[in-house]
Amino acid sequence: MATVVIVGAQWGDEGKGKVVDLYTANADMVVRYAGGPNAGHTLVVGGEKTIVRLVPSGILHEQTSCVLGQGMVIDPTVLLAEIEMLDKRGVTARKRLWVSDRAHVILPYHIIVDSLRESGLNAIGTTKRGVGPCYEDKIARRGVTIGTLMDAQKTQKAVEQALSAWAPVVAALGGSLPTVAEVTDKLGAIREELAPMVCDAAKRVHEAIVAKKNILMEGAQGTLLDIDHGTYPFVTSSTATAGGACTGAGIGPTQIDAVVGLVKAYTTRVGGGPFPTELNDATGERLRQRGGEFGSVTGRPRRTGWLDLPALRYATRINGLNGFAFTKLDVLSGEDTLQVCTSYKVNGKVTDDLPLDGIAEPVYETFAGWKEDLSSCSSMESLPGAARDYVRMVEKALGIPAWLVGTGQERAATIVTHDPMVR
Image (cartoon, rainbow, N blue to C red; front, side, top):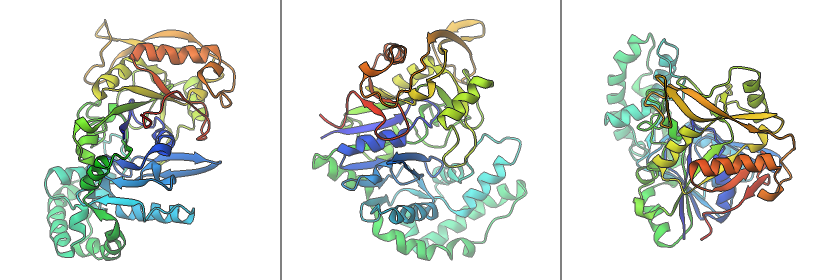
């Protein structure tokens, strides 16, 4: 039995979908423990691309059950649309998908608030999916949980309370809210369709652990977007670090056997906020085009930059990483040289520490590039020397091994040196 947490070690978009999909080959259960429909995970199998926002990436494996944990915020309309999409592709999602009765529900007024805020001067670059306002309602103790949603009277009372609280905010932003009836009248059919999947998810996960099942915990976004440990205030609204697996799935830290960090071979960021290694030049555009760095949820272009080792060392420490999955190494093929940020300058002083606000001047070292296509490489030894040296350099800098190296978009284009699901 193994319980393994997969967590983004940068600003998200590190390729969690592919890695979770790969590791799920040996998993009995995949649990998504944080975030909402703002996190799109892309899977490419047999040339067919599948994008999921809420359903765990392990859903393509028919032997695996999938759980949406209580740390999530769930837009039921998006969830049901995903299930329908999977059904049309022959993926039997309904019989293997479980939804926590403690997860919170994104409702139309959350999306309205999010969109209005992002249209103003203080926009931070959210996906406008209502995630932040939903988490606000959760913390303010006026949220609608999935369990509440199952009861029409309780739902109406909770929606009334939330709309009353949001009314002055929306008015100040120049918008308008739907009525209670407009919100609740559309929930009857949703309630009926979701009901068979709703459960005490933490208990279900616990029972799987007791039964010595292999469990994969799937995070969302990345460490530097974590509400507590990220580059605040340019962060997400959930706990995107490994610690979120405990609260978001309802397990104790002693039940986690390994934590795997997702590390892209370069760095990207979506939305506002500091980005020390950002490239606003032709090199940055090449990385964007080669890597397909456009949001799977929004389609907007991602900001691109060189690899940032101080930020990765920070993520290694915060998450207690045991190993890392090095994704999109193939995107760097064709570069004559590669720049890697090995330290920062902050107020004229060199430091290895990520500053609180994330604002720093990168100090670079230059490494040799390579021209070869990596898609046919099946082992570390088969990689071009410069590519192999690049991986080894990161291993040395972080003090942990690369358990997986991505050499292309397809599931098969991967070098696996260690599978933490196999003990």
